[in-house]
Image (cartoon, rainbow, N blue to C red; front, side, top):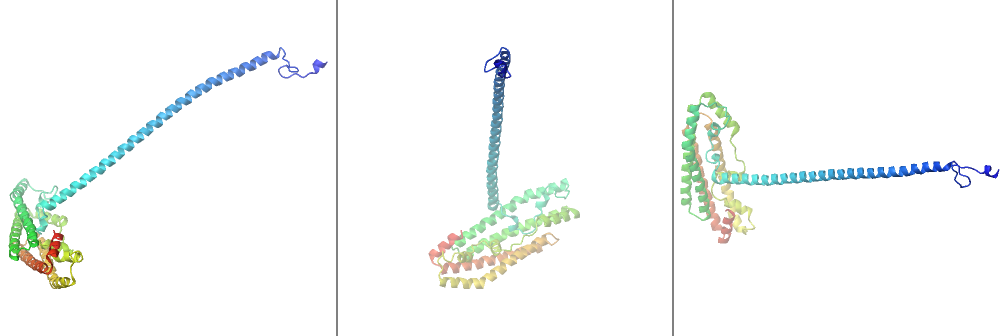
Length: 343
């Protein structure tokens, strides 16, 4: 009775003892456990291997992306640097070109304010529909005269540089005026050649071509009128502007009150006259530009050039008088310092 009253567990165990029936059940359970562990181990190993491979692949992708990013970045930086270098080179080249033009090829408009029609004649797509005969004729003219005009303009530029140096060295007025007359003669010759060119074009273009040429020139190359005082003075006068430099450097040149009073008195009397003459030249140049686009005769236009040359001579004469006053008013040291500032 006592044995039957004892409780059995689900494995048939009684009071902690194993029955024969419980052994197979325990074996099955143990086998399942071992199998799960083994399978789990295998799965874990496989999962680990797969995870490791995925990680390795991911790292490779990341490394590749990083490498590509670095490569692209380096390329962009290199391109940027090259562009920067090229931009610098281009800028320097442009500055050298501009400097070269300024030094070696002065603007035609500074010496001949009239229409320079050859700019249009040899421009691509000028709308003139020139014939082969016209092109040949105009090309022959340019070949024969362009270098001569350029040579005379270069002579004028050289003479004006000499005028500036002679003025700084204290040369006599007569010596300076002779140089001015040489530049005036050359300016007149340049103007005559340019007006002969106008005549050649007008005689060998039909009415429609001529009107197209004039309209195109007016549109693309209008007269540019100088408005700033120093631009005007420098255009009409090759000599240094001593008074302007003095007024800008009163302290540095150690200009005394007495010296300033003398110089101011001269400026008060003569500066308005100087500007009147300078503005008259600008006005005449504007007239020449307009007349060169019309049927105005060469003789009438050249007469305006003679007026300009006369005024240029008067300006140089007055500027030399100013130089003489400044030179006698200042001390030798002050004068030398002033000359250095006008170089």
